[in-house]
Image (tube, rainbow, N blue to C red; front, side, top):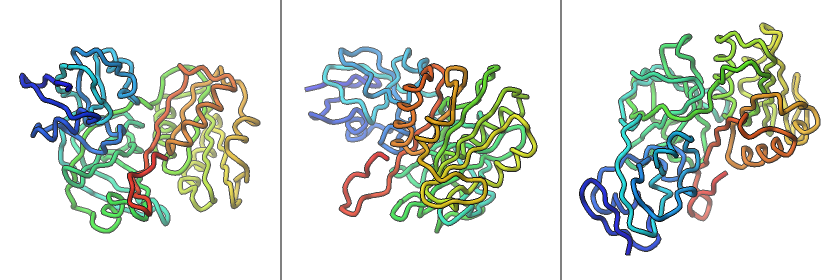
Length: 329
């Protein structure tokens, strides 16, 4: 039997139960969203425990780790534990949709009016209701824009993305929490390498904007990959930057179809063969979780110092045909 001391009360957890599920079952109002360790809305601070916290701190930054922060949806205490709530960026606010545009067949852009400060490349969590929430990276820049821009990939069976596609329009009010995350521009005099697939290009595009605003003079290499050329939905926007700034280099990579300025090749092989001097670069990788994990391994094996790597991985919540828990992709 594991006892959790929380808000001056003792809570008994069931065997194998996560901290979040145990608190919710006992009637505590704990902020939560994805329940997959991505949105970080369920962060709590562990004050005393005999358990290792490592497995419940994926994506938690070093400062938060030093404060004992864990993702309560991932933490399964085996010993009696004392925890306290975390208030930073934890309050949900109301945002208004001011624009909605489809960028291609499966990506929709929404712009929100929301009263909070952010750094381009961070992410926010959007709420459909108390049980369904998803996190998306911020594309807009606070100097250029007075709104929050997000790019949302539409999944065929995605409960949240289908709601955005079919039921959310200009004037709609959405609960927003954040911002969070530290995959942002580093103000350092080093070459930059930014690698993205799918809507991973959204935070990458924002980070490039921030680098330009900050007068970054070193090389900025962007590797933008997709299965098919039509899925490179921000290619034209990036090509505009390419013509305007001499230090920007753009690599468009496709696996199954070619197009203007694109190379048909495996993106991992392309990076390994074409990108040199990784030890001298700040590297950013954004995309689905499986891509980010594999690319990280490739980059590190090719000489990248882990301290110079920033990344944001996206989780898929689309249910499988069998209706099982969605795979982490």
